[in-house]
Length: 393
Image (cartoon, rainbow, N blue to C red; front, side):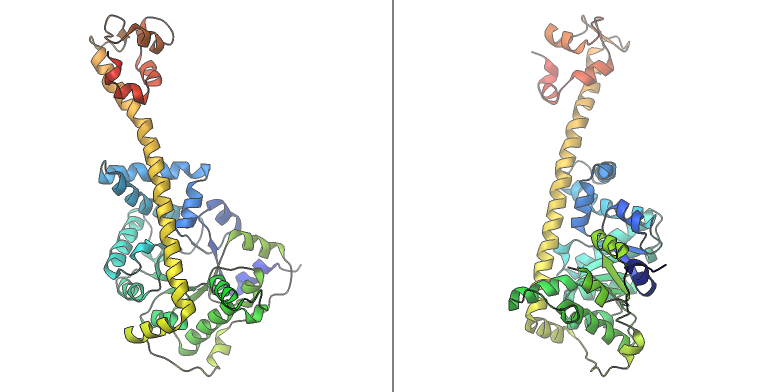
């Protein structure tokens, strides 16, 4: 029986699920998984994950107090780690968790945030060897990754578009890099007006192939994980790459397609190539980055996009936090009010004890037995009622 493309690819490349949806990960059983704020936001809006979101907000509130902005900031980290932990209960390998993209040019801030995230994982019983901290491939991000790797925290350098970024990452011992195949293709199509490229001439495929060959030629341990695919042909052209992170729709297409999948990338071939070795320091990095228009534009655009995704997630969580507060306040208010009105402490409020209006008493006395129970008060009281001094007039 012939094997489908997914089965063949899995024999030569580590397949990574590019999703925060636990159902998709359970379905395809990849070794690793990677997430980002957009994927977390999408997952957080699914009904089946509402309990995860609420739990993250409640825990954040317990940790930082009644400061909504701080609660949301902490909840994003807690939510990212919670999804990551659940993913690690499914996959046998690693999960990538992203540092806030707004820290992309802040080396110290990135280092601090990475340590926080790893601390939350270890608190949840997850060994740091199973976590990759995802950081944008700015010079500051690469320097942060160098320190983090020394600290035993492994990094995934993302938003990588140029060889200069890849070489700098390998020089400092980064665990893994994620060059963005599809975004490179997008830029070239827009820049040149070319509607399409043959698979073997796809600029994104060529870029990742060059990075892979450079690493293998000079014996760097840094792994290459192609990311951001626009079509199945890009994935097929990179068969043999160390890792490929693939969205669920393409994973399904690979599984449904039966065809021969020849290996395109392999270390022996790379070692036979004549490639000039280059050394990257900060001055060289910045000069090469400035001269590489595509890498320069796509890195800035990617950081802006990831930052917007964080803002969207913040708004989602802020809205949910407000909803939870509205749900909690009537209950707290009802408890306080019941204590005030239940003068003899017998667990019910009689009409004689009630100092509000008869209309309100009758509305709360659902079974019309002349007594208001704690449940009746909690069920009948509204948020506006609480604000109106307990309904007293």
